Length: 400
Image 1 (cartoon, rainbow, N blue to C red):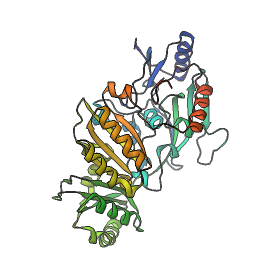
Image 2: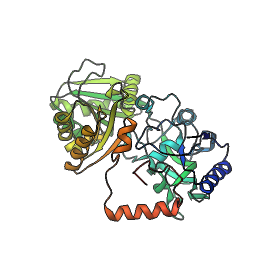
Image 3: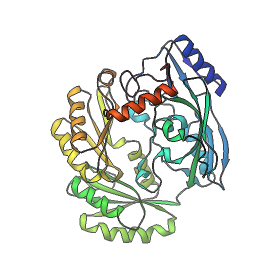
Image 4: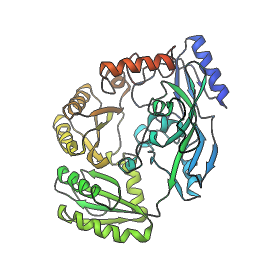
């Protein structure tokens, strides 16, 4: 790239896109660049950063609504919410450890990639489900708005869901309005020593099927969560008013006792544990020539997928979302990637090459191939939103 553009306002983003179209010079769209190593490398003449679009533009704690410019750092938003005992619903992860970056993730980057933490399995849904409204600049160099700043605003074409998860290929997000929720007063985790991943996922299923409001459910194959439990450990999180947690945890402990020894992780230790799971830190340090994949499958098939991967190449694993999200780290080779694709396909699930060497990311499919009808719709949407193809070309698919 010849340089990085960082406009100070939305008008500057419009001008940058207009110039890119006129010059036939594609743009690599990003916030702080914390996820630059995700999916495929973008071949672009210039970079366009939203880091200059910063600040909370609306916060109504009583209505549980917050709006901020796309380049606003997530920690800044979380700090403002914490002052009023509230939180971002999607539990946005910080993958600086995976990508080797130092700057914090931005709100726009989290929404553009639709990244959601362990709380995804709870009633809260994905990040895109919390977006009430957006402002964005399309490849026509036009500002579009979708949704609004109230919970029941559903007027117009719902571009919110379309742009969330589009990785900057359809528009440059400039402002996002989100629902927020009250922050839990306490956190407690039940850690269950299990014989195998299968038993671990069974324990998670039992907890998630109970009436006790489990808000996080993961299995660490290697154990070691700082409480003396070795081997696979199933982790179930409870979040509530601190005074209510002892009763709920005691009842849930009775449900889980048949699966193995149960220990309790409380308070800040529980919060730190789930922060680590959120950020995929149990995978360990990721080498420059290693890759990280995420496979989404039916939760009961998570252990089977893990076994297939272990038989194919040296791999470090973690299961989140009740067993349905399989994290895998291993050699960044075409052979390992082919094994991941095969495992996902045989399980009827999907995969994402989340991080890897540039040569691998540029030469393989980083996402599953879309069925022809969906691919045709995606092509028409791209042509309508970015006809000149100047926004993050090739980020999700070769030539796209």
